[in-house]
Image (cartoon, rainbow, N blue to C red; front, side, top):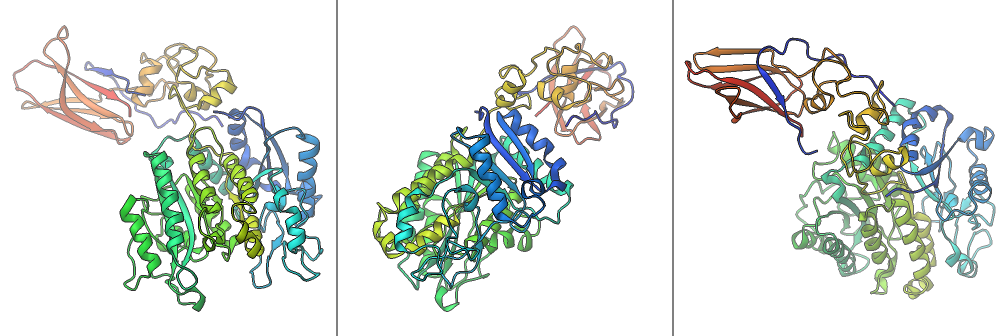
Length: 581
């Protein structure tokens, strides 16, 4: 959405003092289908987001939950029916098709899953990703039940028959915002997602990998040492400039209900830590992989850490690009997906829930460890979406478990099925970890290619206004030459961009408001723009070279005063040079 320059600009005269300016240093998805499905009340909240994705090269389709269900908004069967028709009739030949469900499971429904009777009911979008597998063969509306009884959806024979064919017909993500939210709040979430994909910041070199519980009462923790340390080491060796944050729940006696819940905060460990905790501490010390340790507690502590304990959000060193959640097969996957999603939404990024399986019982090689390592490395690659990495690793998992993890599969089909159901993408499935803005004009290369602008020239039309600025501002167009001084204030467009004033408003331009000399101490008053650097320069005569002094200030958005000491009798000229970050 375009906007106008703010009227809160600097008003006054330039005066006789010279004010000079100096400029600082300043993989798309071609036509891939991307369907957005949301409640009708939020339609306008997604306008900017869908336009951004269009500029990245996606072919956007939109529809409302009310329309696709005929008003029966609680019907997951009708949602799946619509998605199936969309896949087979609208985009039948596309190798990749992305879907984003906007709303939590209470807003856009999904079936309830329970593999074994003791499992809690959980939700999963696998029903929308895999459009051909029957997860409810007994018709009782509790999906993916496993056992020998006639009321279950799978037994060992039927699961063996379909397992290797479970796959992604669609790449589905979900932004789990509450149905009670207003359109403005939803729009703010999607604005954060766009901002995240645009930015080039240190947090894009970080990922959170959430591992499941280390239960030393059930099995030796050495297998987790292998899994976590191996994954982290591979990531760091392959991408030495990246950092990985590992979050682990180490339960001392989970089966007896005496774990370390809520005894761990930040990087402080309770005194009676277990062998599992020793291993995690060793990971910290050996490769600096962990920025903090907190108790995952079946998914709850992401929410707890982000919102309740820490108040304003995650600690400063936990500002991740991607969340990878790995857990054991007894994990409450529905809660894990949801709470990881809350964290992802809070960060403006995405979560991928890829649970572990009890291959720890059979030793190396661990299929889930390979999935985690490869998914992480792929997400760190440029121009690969989270959803694409997720789909590839999901397919690898279901293909390799019966082979590499054969013994585990034979002995624990329920656990394997539980993990397959638990794979989730919470967040934007089309999010790409790194996108280039080669000419640093505020538009990503893919956007410029879509708009017909130059990717290696920040000012396609040559009028001194960056392409990104013109795209987002009313009254100018990056394709149309607007003249070098649009507002006619005798300061060029380019200089005003550097100074942080509005090049479209004639009363706003860089200037020095006041110059006073008090016994050799010269004071210069200058309206400032936030983040710009202001330096005093001097010369004895205007024909001499200007000399930069050591006096400088960082702009605050308000009037700033710079002072310089000189001989009271000396004749001197002064000016201020502005640089932008």
